[in-house]
Amino acid sequence: MRSLLTHLDRRTFDLIAAREWPGAQRVLPRLTRSANHGLLWFGLAAGAAALGGRPMRRAALRGVASLAVASATVNTLGKRSVRRQRPLLDTVPVIRQLHRQPFTSSFPSGHAASAVAFATGVAMENKWWGLAVAPVAASVAFSRVYTGVHYPGDVLAGAALGAGAAFAVRGFAPTRAQLAPPARPRAQAPALPGGRGLAVVANQRSGQRSGPRPDRAAEVHGVLPKAEVTVCGEPDGPSLDKALEDAAERAKELGGALGVLGGDGTVNAAAAVAVRHGLPLAVLPGGTLNHFAYDLGIETYAAAARAVETGEAVAVDVARFRAGPHLEGRQFLNTFSIGAYPEVVRIRERWAGRIGAWPAGVLAAWEVLRTAEPLTLRINGERRAVWLLFVGNCQYRGLGFAPVRRHDLADGVLDVRVVHGGRLARTRLLLAALTGTPRSSPVLGEARLSRLRISDLPEGTTLAFDGEVAHAPGELTLEKQNEALTVYRLLPES
Image (cartoon, rainbow, N blue to C red; front, side):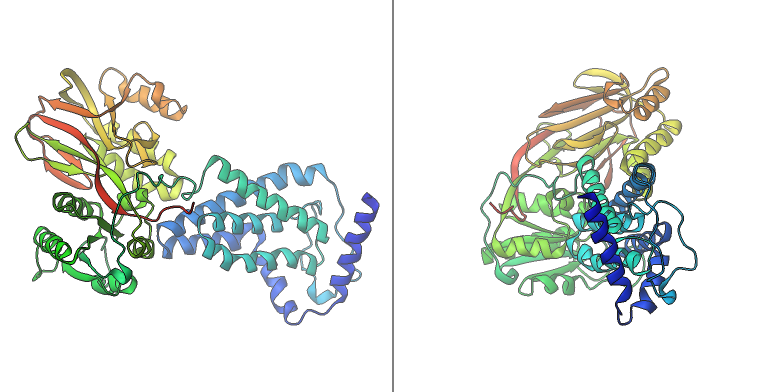
């Protein structure tokens, strides 16, 4: 059986060598050289990360990670386990042959493994980019036979190994689609074809760092042409609060819904108005980070538009904080924090795209704890010295001191995490993080609560919530409002 497969492999190699492939001799040898050491794929990944949005950066990172696993497997196991000589070049036209012939074992093809691993990894995050990369990957794999450096069997084995590497990476680092928040509990919301009946407030200031000012109304009408759009954030335009109130009143007249295009702070303000008026909310991610929209599973305007047009929606929790039992409070959809946490987030986000969320979290926590001073306050009546207090609306995943994202937006809990002060606290927390055991460290405290009371806050303390910063009163109470907000989002097919 083995001899038969070897014969078929060599016979197929000779047939490919003897056949004319129009235009191939000018393209394939150059293409195969460009893929040496993964340079072609690293270049594509760098370009996508620089020019694309957050989904493209995730796809690029997954593609590179899959390539790395495939390359390591080929070089440490594949080529050392099977010592196969390279094909003889007698039947391969000289014009096709590479100037520098590889000298390692022919089995399996490392180029094919890297190409297929990268393309498969990319497709797992972004199927359209995966489809675009697939022909390039297939051409690189075929070029190894065309130029005479591999038998077809080597290429097929490398391709299978590359695909397996991508699936292995997905096994320990699930894709965002695998971790999409559950579509529960489902809620009633009107279907608004074309956005008819949707009153949208678009914040001109959200997400803009440099370059020309985006036409926010055009962005909304590009996916929901019948929606009514009010742009705020202009010097001569309405304020955000007034625009949201007017839009809510208009949505009620139309029997429709309130929409918002902006970042987390803008979405927070819109959610408060939607809850007060009993309206469903459509979120178009137009900010810099868009934590709420992404945790909801809405990563593009198109995804939000499809949910609005089909009337697919869920109920999500809202968390509130107030200074006293009879005082009106504020709400947060994502996070509330006191102490150094806002700075931890800022540093983590700056580095996460380059080195990954876990190393970035370690770096951020150490940098902040190295320079910060702990606060002394009371948490549920118990006096404590803390460097940072984090409260999430629903439970977050990730390291204890650097939570990353949520799986369930209606779990009924406040995710409370505290980094305590004390002797050698900085060193102990860093060691716990580096050894992967932050939750077992006595420096870190965690709890899942429905209510939290914070008191004896020092004067001048600041708090942060959903990207906004405010002065903290001396006493605060945080509570959950379970399933208080109805939000449009696509539901999985049953």
